[in-house]
Image 1 (cartoon, rainbow, N blue to C red):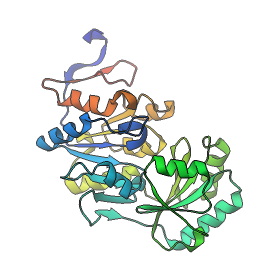
Image 2: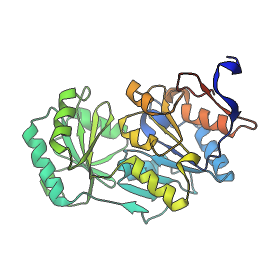
Image 3: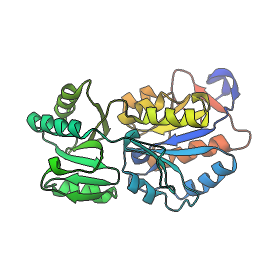
Image 4: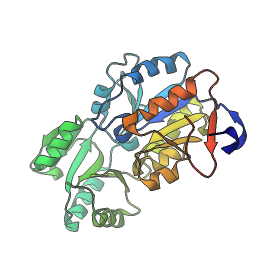
Length: 294
């Protein structure tokens, strides 16, 4: 496509100091794997003093295992922002558990809603679940989640980061509507996947977690690039001038981001970053579209 069809006059290359990426549907392909080229890319980002942050709804222990090959460690945002901690360091930068009385109250409300969804409690590194279906167990195993079966969710004493809902076959509009209406003003409720809905404390989100890191390391949104593919990434997009929705994201998510990256099965995150790092590379934006020229 000729340069005259691109939006804006001269092309330019921003100074990126921080890159944050979601995991499922974004950095991971459909088989739940990270492309081998990503690990080379991390070494290159380190050489250029560009921070890479993993930003996911996944459990902290799962993320640590995902990136155990990176001995220098990565900053991990787990449970949609309830935990910020390096993968190789024992002390969190930030960690918040839900108040126990709020967890009990939420469980009672969820029970009264008679949802066609299973409920689990997410502690820092372990899921607690009562009489899980074979489908839920399979999902935990597929996504490398450590889980414990308990006779009662009300008896769980470990600090809870979020309450999760799993609906086999996909979340129904009724389930999402009922939960959001029931907890409006008291909890953050986000759809984090086709079968997952997360309930967190007020003011917990990926966006707020990233904002904490930006403040800590004095990095502005203008120097930040982020990648995501689902509704729990919307606030993440708001913290970066260079927000990329994956090509496999729902239309509403693409609309919320400034640009579109290749899909997760095409190694889109790595492709965009490598294109940015390439010598003499520049950004170009298509007229009337949110596509990135890569």
